Image 1: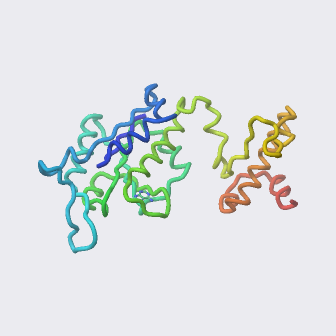
Image 2: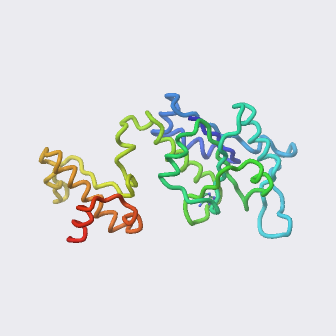
Image 3: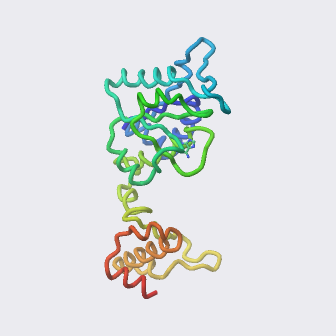
Length: 240
Ligand code: ADE
């Protein structure tokens, strides 16, 4: 899967994404992540990419032409117009479902704004999706783009190594993941739940499922409303 990140800060995104699991998957050729420096497409030899907004207001806007030319360079190279995602607090909220959906694409362009944003005309021309990573405002789209690349990449077969770990985790069926424990059996006076030491797989599965349900009820009651529980599980939950 190929990601093209259009940004004014290529080192920022590449330093983050060359590390750990995503870095290893890139080295293994499962992912190709490229930062395209919008400043390379500046309108003059001084590297100018921003200007004042018409109508007044605070700050500077990224100009249309450098952004368009950076996008066009990708389109020409790959010979098609891929989905182009603009990272913006005005976008649709990014979720695990979005990550799964995007993981089906062969190529994705992520557009990172900076300063007060980007000239609307180029957005109309190239953007297919607007995505926000949450209801807060960051200084640029670089961190959100890294979040999207990370969450989408781990849905790509082979990236996580252990195929199952991408499946049985938080948000599957709108439930949060159950708590996990490792050695030693007792730490700081706290024991690992007995059922996990029992070797009884059916009981372990039931316990984990119940823990998932309880955790979701406690921390994300909004998710629990959409969770796929059996009638028996709803009954159990109402009784405790
Ligand atoms: N750019 C600035 N803030 C953002 C956010 N919350 N999500 C996506 N892009 C952004």
